[in-house]
Length: 127
Figure 1 (cartoon, one colour):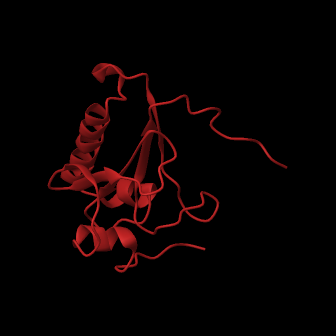
Figure 2 (cartoon, helix red, strand yellow; figure 1 turned 90 degrees about the vertical axis):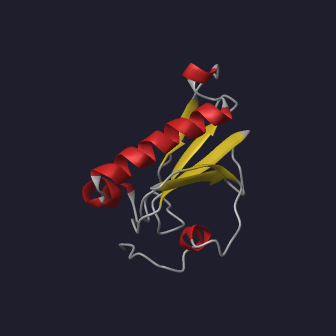
């Protein structure tokens, strides 16, 4: 099952200021804000302002300026949260869930940045 972009998804509504958020950082191309259900002491979502469903959609179709703006905002959010190695932190994990197998809940590309504690193994293997 492929996702089509839904202009009524929660992140699109956040970008239109219809739903409030706890902004960490923002630039012309992306928005970083705290997750409402944090899985770590620091849990920030970074979303592009364009209509991209997934990482592969963003990587293939975003402009160079959008990709750079998104990536630089990730670095800014990591520094502001104090989890990056350059900002005295002990590290972080980034996750982008994509599609049904990736358990993507919102059809708008978003990158989770989680830190502030040891995150444990990346995946638990199941049969």
